[in-house]
Image 1 (tube, rainbow, N blue to C red):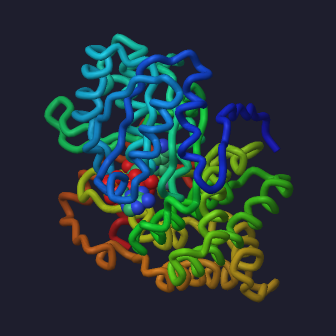
Image 2 (cartoon, rainbow, N blue to C red):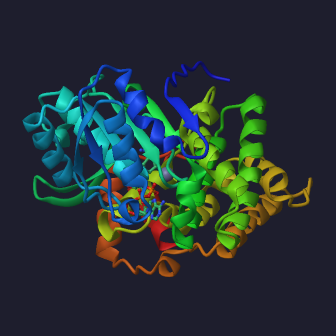
Length: 394
Ligand code: NZQ
Ligand code: ZN
């Protein structure tokens, strides 16, 4: 195990109807006026927005709405939100939705607490530990942004470059509280359930595939999480109102990306960096993009540490171990993951994802991808531009 710090102060408020408690919760932080930030109209149709508004009013809070968040949230709306908050003297931001709404809220909160232009933060030219207070109400089990330290945003244009999907990570961005009601996820389309669940699996897998040794405690916890999510997803896509399956997914989403499964080890995250380029260029659903990338990444790197891939195969997908040929076991584990993806309707290649990038587009994505890591991405195997191109071509 390597040294680590783990700091996760987000208060989790979990279970049926908890979205009504957001107002009371915010009041405790001394706020007066709240920006309620969200995406599409499912929140109006289901009455969630009304319930949240009522909770705010009952707590004696003023509020103003800003909707329009889209999947792969855009910087332009964040900038609009920052201006609106300044104009309206907003002192608390409440996101309702998935990773996109929560990350958009994080962007607004960074903008309120700092003087720089947000693109400079996302491009790595400045850093900060200051952010305005945020809370959230999750409506999808997926990114774990409700407790994560991360914000992922698409910059539409930066110095002539278009659609750069970039992230900034700092512990200050963990929301003060997260209301998580599994019932709110019942209205999700099946594709989004599956995409979100794949992202949950991937957040732990990105940390699981490490060359750090003596990490058995977190390995075992991770394998438990992966098996539970594997099974709950199969139930959730078939039975939309299976509360226990939704609850498992929702809590797993947070546990998978709050940093716990990365403690004491070097994480990888190459697949995420590669997928972010697909999301920036083609606007694909994040979890589906990860499914399209991971098998190729895995086949490209597994020989670095076949024993680790074999352990994943045996413990997560019950592949019989061939002790004399760990590479064979490793490959069967990759196939088992792809079978699971197919069962839940997720793609395992870019063509199944519905995109066919040209060679020039692949090169552009590879250049942008490694630029975020000073020439390489990932740690299980450090990948340079040519490696990323090879993975895209696989
Ligand atoms: O657009 P709206 O109307 O809000 O609808 C959303 C969206 O179309 C819909 N939806 C969400 N809850 C629903 C619902 N529809 C019906 N009923 C509900 N209860 O689902 C669609 C997807 O929502 P989105 O928020 O985009 O999904 P997700 O939570 O997967 O977030 C994806 C974004 O988060 C980033 C991704 O890159 C992507 O931009 N990530 C953020 C991370 C973080 N902050 O820690 C880490 C992740 O690795 C990821 O990169
Ligand atoms: Zn993710």
